[in-house]
Length: 291
Image (cartoon, rainbow, N blue to C red; front, top):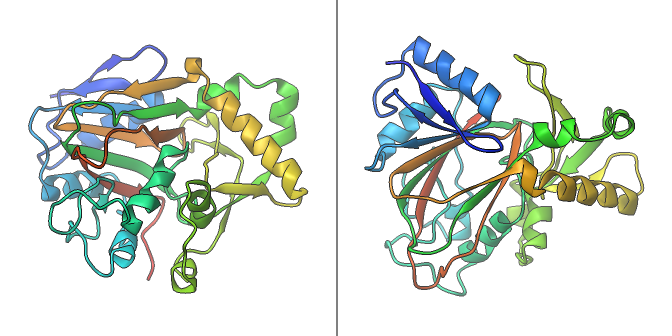
């Protein structure tokens, strides 16, 4: 079957017609990439959650997959998930219990409440994120998305010209400190150095331009820090206006896929001390990871 799409109001679309549990054909991949180029966010609603292998295989069909063990290090070598291809963005510990109030992994995740794109803090950028909802809380825990293409298009020609050749520095530790995670060891700091990325990204297939922002972005290279910070804050405020955003209200089993080179996103709060939110992400990269 071919992919069928039901567009949302501002951007994004509900996707059906391709069973993402099964191996994707070359034609399936081509249709999904084309849909992502147009809509930037796709929602697959199959009812029952994907299992780990199905989610990983879906990601692998679309590009090199990120391997990450950051939370395992933060948790003293313990984690709920055994597969390094799966990134745990839920609130369960290695025993399947809700992470305690003082657990460092909880405070690390607080940075996800800020507007960001995944993996901007690495040289090898994230392309697609594929988030699977295994268990969702009864209230809250939504995910907001901002279309950075629409935000770029709405800038004046003078502002577009001003930012065209600017480069920002991105660091995971900058965003985590913004989110209140400040107790970071030198060993942890050494696992993730800063990266530099152009403030304007062009899709290689459509050539459509988008802002490339994130809470990980600390300053503009070559500018006074306060001046660069002011620009980044102003662009983020501009890009997250209502007309450029979509809020996804999760149902168990949902799989939401987004383009990190065309969108930002953020988690929203819920009662994470009493309610379970088991969410697992697979992330594709621009190129294969190197050790």
